[in-house]
Image (cartoon, rainbow, N blue to C red; front, top):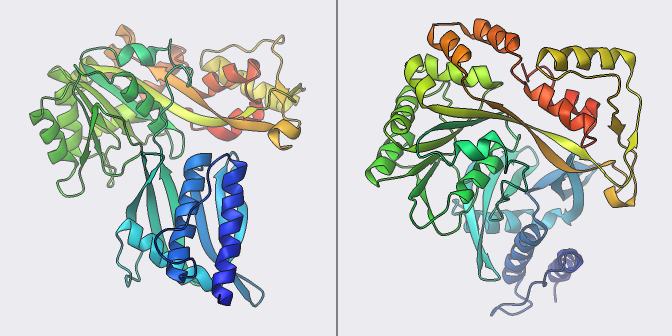
Length: 432
């Protein structure tokens, strides 16, 4: 056995041990001999993929780094609060590991430019897929592997089962927009809405430039790389779709006029349309469509509602404690929350993080979504259709005490779900 084989055995042992901790079976030798280095690299990559699948790791970063004169591969995984270093792999395995991921993702082995692909595995008779991105750096290619989830939460698990959202998506037609910054979990909320509509009598078609979730039977996922989004919308209409889902509105650099007009037309002609887009707040989402040439009256008539979402960390219920808030912060959040329709009283108590064994001394255990929902009232519709500019419409929303994302976050804070500081950090000034 070579030194390289012994080192690979050590790496396999580490990731198999991590699998065992998570309750998953370790990797097993294939047809190739145990001493076959290429076979061991393939097993190592498969074991890493299985570990991500079993533990539901959202993404893993394999990065070449230089520490003094010693190079290695740093393996980091994303957890609540950011990335955590899991392991270091000898740099000697950088090239074979990179080539194996490229092979699995359908990327050219000799391509020196950044590339993206999808790697597929089958674990426990379940298809498992990953987005794989390989990009050159000064020290060599970095590999980022992102799990494409198959475990879609329910609306009840997201706290939306009795919300306006659940009512909007049961209507036979209309447009529902999911907005928020990158990484706010809006794709998850929309996926839960899609999953709740799965029924053999309903034709659901998802258009997605990049797959966010692997849906179960009952959902058709169109590949739009070749045709483009606008053509895919037309294809879905030709397929007699009932529920049309657009996982990402084009943003190059602004909302695509053709796509915007097609999906509003689809909603107007009797289809339920769910669309995801990046927008800093509810009003911005509306005016993206106006800028794309959609008639205000048509948009107002077809819109079921808009969900604007942010993510904040949830306090550990085992160790959170009541805490005083500085007078300066209290005055600021009280002013903003009251302005947006949620009056904070002196009786409201806030909680803060402490840290214990259950939360690994972090004080926080997971992330929770802040949902701001919007639908037209007669007065809001009159202002919008009447030609109000974006700043004017924002003032109208304030006058009508339309609840903002910040106000929704403060409701979670007074319920003890999160801390006021976390709401300020997570939403900031973006929640208009």
